[in-house]
Every structure is written in C-alpha cells, then in structure tokens.
Image (cartoon, rainbow, N blue to C red; front, side, top):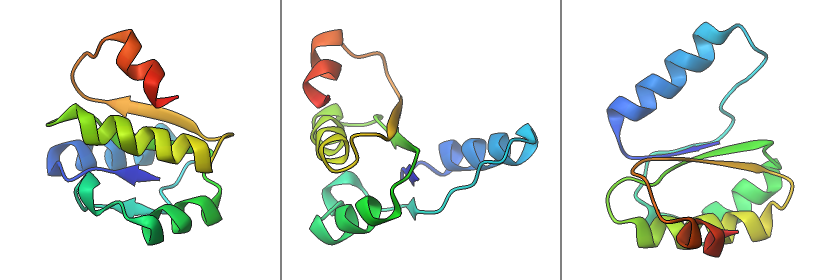
Length: 96
C-alpha cells in the first residue's frame, strides 16, 4: 500500500517497484492527505492485509505519526516504511 499526496514521491515509488524486477505491487494507492485516512479507508487497508505500507511522513509529521499508529494497530504484521524528513526516534516509537 502507498499513502502519499506527493506526486514526485509516488512516481519514484511506482518506478522503483516496476524497475526492481521483484514480485511487488501496490494493491492500495491512497493519494489523499492523511486527514482523509478515515475509518473506511483504514478498514479497507486492514482487509487487504498488506505486507508493506509505504507512508509519506513529509509535511506535518503529527498526522503521519497518528496514521502510522492506526495502521500498525490494524495491521500488526505489516512492515511500515516511512518516507520523509528525519524524525526523532521517540516520535517514531510512538507510532509503533
């Protein structure tokens, strides 16, 4: 799954997956801002049981941290990959 509104980041992720030759695909692509990550979208994400969730942490990191926490609680086996600015370790641990 990919959650980002950044067109450049989205293109980079899709190109990297396509060019990697690995058996990866994006089954859920959420191009809305994190404040639009409502219970319906979270449930859809949970139902897909993704192995990897790529989450854009750019912009305001607080909604991203809250979204990461909600995703981790609903998909405990999914690997969360945060992409964006460097954040303090304690803030990242709060999301887990």
